[in-house]
Amino acid sequence: MTLPTPPEHLETTGARFAAEPTDQEAAAHVRQMFDTIAPTYDRLNHLLSIGLDRWWWTRAARAFGPLLARPEARIVDLCCGTGDMTSALLRLRPSTPGTSPVTGVDFSPEMLSRARSKHARANATFVEADALHLPFADSSVDLITAAFGFRNLANYEEGLAELHRVLRPGGQLGILEANQPGGLLGLGYNLYFRGILPRLGGLLSRAPAAYRYLPASVGRFPRPPRMLELLRASGFRDASWTSYTFGVTGLFRATK
Ligand SMILES: C[S@@+](CC[C@H](N)C(=O)[O-])C[C@H]1O[C@@H](n2cnc3c(N)ncnc32)[C@H](O)[C@@H]1O
Image (cartoon, rainbow, N blue to C red):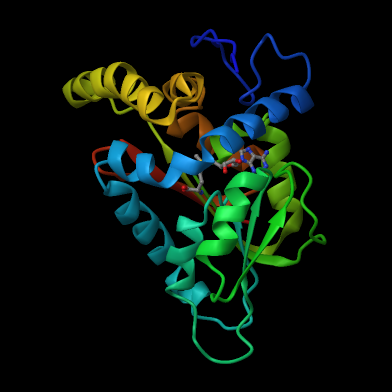
């Protein structure tokens, strides 16, 4: 599969490349890419993040500890992939009978099938759907998380509008995303992220386009101040960003 290389300086409203005329086409590319890398996704994720991914998921889940402790709370893990963020959320759910399950949502059948087998005995359900068209009623969800997935949405404004629609008033949003750190550390990190990671990932997954897409999509994703503006413009309040691991990753939080 060949993915067009995006012009990185462009202000974008989503992961759609100029060569992809519609959001649907962009979404189909992303879905196909994740279906292709699903068999090696978990192993490569841990390797390429030198194991920090587990800490990031755990830390992001803990940020919503009090909400997760409420048995009746309706929790959705968007862009759940193989379900590692889902697992971090589940570890903070009560074990009492009747506790509402965590719902993982993803549009890649291959990623979802791995999530289902990893969570066969967990209090979780998995649903195949596009994040831009969620199969949930208005104002019906207490918490939506999205770990390393929101960046891939074809249209960020539409994505935020959809998340705002399904969250209850007072509901919480947590978007964990990769970031481009600045300064000297940023220079060094960029060497790794743009030079070594795409080569290593491409070699081990045998899907080089997917691992070229990763740094390109992070480069195009709005920097935290711009993303906070987008969150506020979409109707969220108390929008904040917390840097993880010197800004390599960070958690956006907001309330409907
Ligand atoms: C980088 S993976 C992250 C998976 C998981 N959350 C994690 O932290 O490992 C991104 C996931 O987002 C999913 N995804 C991307 N765009 C999506 C969309 N529009 N709707 C639903 N899922 C989407 C992909 O299929 C993929 O499984």
